Length: 233
Length: 108
Image 1: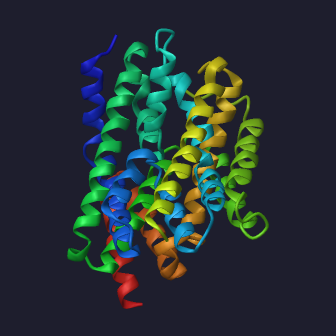
Image 2: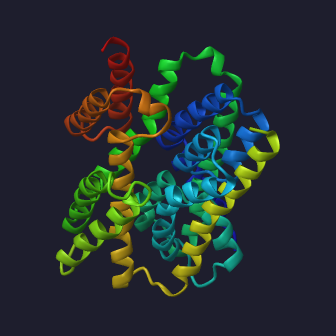
């Protein structure tokens, strides 16, 4: 059964800093597409159907660099591969035994770094049967806001200087970083976060396309196995 | 670049992105939130996100690559300093860092 109250609570959580953090970078993305010669429908569809900003930038850059469709597919797949472990991680938390499969596959579209962090920040205070609808409200609002901000960025790009637009792009990784350091509590998370950052830098020249995924798997495994017996409440 | 090619690119980007999410739902079928594999995947997820952020700051692609690495690093340090100095105020830290980033880009 759908809980409209949980949905509304999720929307409420999304309004404010999460929507501002993601929306500002989506605004800059829309402006970037405008300057790169894309049309407004393409800008709209890009966020509507993919809703994963790093992959959207990679798609546009690959097109502009003269890449083939296969280049676009592989570049986006690798860039957005972070969504795979994030989805495997969040679905068991938000579903219950009654959540239908179609709803899980539909809700997966709203999984992004911002919705993932914000859901994990509050999930313990929400009843299990209400978590999925809460997440749909949270992620769905962030998604709709992102689509609107992309279109707004496309339409109003002339009103904002290029320097400000670059500043808006920078807001999103800074917001991600703050959300990440807010998880510096459990030793296994601290180890995973630091090793992930260091390894991705070290591996960048060795495996340019794969460094993030390889760094994440090695660093996460190190954090998990070294502090496997850690008890944290 | 033709319009048709851009639409096809959006289509393949959509398939590539949704595949990661849909395969994640499929893989999570038998995973319980209190299992050991769940804890391992949580560590991998946060490590991947951390790796993404480090790469955006140090080796960005797209518009951020036109900015100076020193400016990005200084702005990141300012973010963390403000965040931990002002009771973990997210919006203050992010906005201060972004404003410093814009100003440093302009003046350095």
